Length: 362
Image 1 (spheres, rainbow, N blue to C red):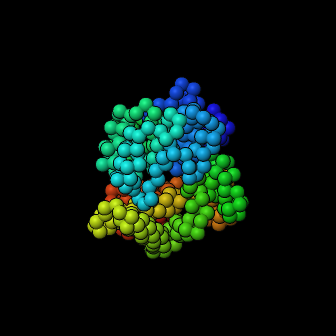
Image 2: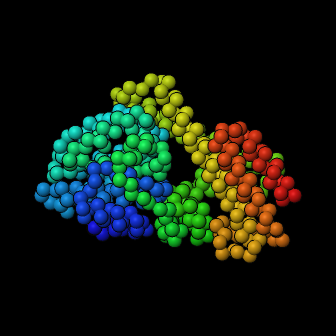
Image 3: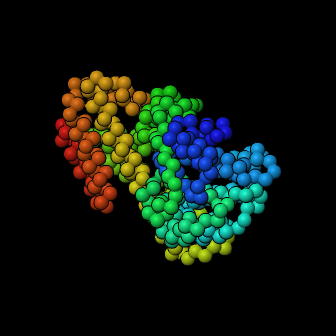
């Protein structure tokens, strides 16, 4: 295993062991790299693909490896597919992966196809990909990256060798955030990220800071409309995502891909709903985190507090507080998250949450 692959799996010992064994015995034709966002799946996939292409090189393995490691890579036998919008386009999967996998390598003896965010493939794309996985050419290696393996068809998953990635440790995330925000804010983002470096970086963005503020306004339940800012934040994020997806799909249509106005509108709306739901759920998770911090401080366990940058405010609220109250409030937030999964009214669910939290804290 090269230094690049070792570095990319520094905090993923299980993945490093599995990939080392694969290179030693000969890589399989298909893999699923599964684990949370920001856990290093993409970096590990690029390094692993570089090793496969270097092994199959007929002239200069080091040069093949070097070109494969570049992002974007100029190596003709490395195909890296990233969704431009909320989903992978069916035709792009067919053209760039399925059809391309039948062509012999341009150089050397291997071709590698990496599909990032594989869960964003529609069922039609996954079913079309199935034959490639069932009857791959000897020189083809497919790597699917996913943070939502349950969204992949069982027929796809069963034909790929899984490589598991764990959430990154807090220290690793905090080190990666060096220079962003002040030290206490970085410490809070690293702890609130739940092992997801992408989330940690989002929490340090203007949008992420606003989401935290909206979540904590809800947590304090200072008035009957305490949830409004969180709801508006989710709506705004959804609108932005819908507009971005629509622009991307319109560009694809202009480039010659067949897209009806209805298809574009429906896909854009799905992207907007997905982002809205994602932001709302994260806001509620942050709200529950506030209550867990209050419970920790109420029992004198300040060392386990996540929101390090708001420690003074949390201590003031926790003074003389029975720890059972914030623990109960956190349970109510988790119950609300489950209710929203059942498609209940978001506004009514959040309004009910504020009312119930107010009763707990008097």
